[in-house]
Image (cartoon, rainbow, N blue to C red; front, side, top):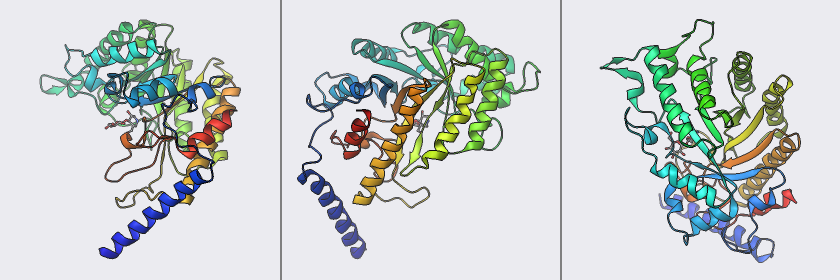
Length: 377
Ligand code: 9MR
């Protein structure tokens, strides 16, 4: 036990001195993300794409707080991390709670930031009432009419103000074509046309009718690393587009590991971008980028911030931003959102502290932040 503690302390000391070394060389200034002289991601990437983060409404309450100032300075697009999901916006069938989302949209308008709506439908963070009728399974008709009412009410409230919606989240299967969810189980192939996309189609059609100018996204994870999942996404979207369903683009969540195979990733983006062959306006968005520095399936322990990790981390971020620039130059990508404001609030801190964002938990800029800024120049 004691030996382990000494090993951990030694590694921590090594990590700290690695960070100090960088500063002592004068390469990395000690800056906070909200400092006036600090570089701004939104400014650096203005010619390529909007850059943003997932935040929470409590970050927007005090204009003097470091979080508020960081958000206003660094970002041109924002997502609410949890407060615009079905369980929060629409927890009971006849009750909506819009106050947090209203505050968020007002803040965005005051700061020339694009608000994203995340997410109209998901298999998780969704209240059970959608699927039940007097203690029994709801019929397909009832589920579809509830989807229509839910989507119409929310999208029409923010018509012209929230220009992009994640209409459905994580509906593609990890093995089969679609995820097995309550939506799928209860609605199935309702129109009898041979596919099971009916609940997804209903959501997109309702969103489009409520705001014909809104960008409507189908959002999912692992598209960048699993070509079979990217192909399943391509097939589903192609079929729906051919059937006239108004899908504007695919969201790549991009919850990635520390170290990427850029060529393989580029190929997976190409699979989705082939939708442009028939639908020239089709877009891609990056919706939830973060870099998990913790190996999958390893037992909980804090990430050791070694020199090697720092270098790999910077390389991972610059690799993916290199790809984003290419996609932007091809006219495919105009929005990149990171999933969290700083390390301290990332969802990846479960049971151990992680190092996934470009900004530390003290709101200091990391070396990788400066590398990403340099890449834009
Ligand atoms: O970051 C969100 C976390 O606070 C919630 O507990 C979690 C609930 O499942 O959802 C997280 O956000 C998810 C996003 O909405 C969809 N893609 C995966 C994200 C990380 O889990």
